[in-house]
Length: 61
Image (cartoon, rainbow, N blue to C red):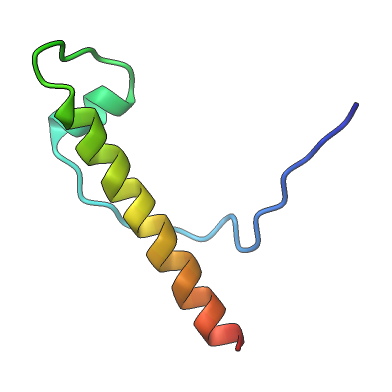
């Protein structure tokens, strides 16, 4: 079964400001005493993705 995901403007770039600890957490480093680092990084990524797509949908309508 061949399933592919199409993402409009998937090659566009976005900028996200992360701390070194956040990058390490997303890369798989474990911070057992501070799980909020990974949560913070994921929230920042989700926020940028939402903003990027909301901006694109406003431009197309």
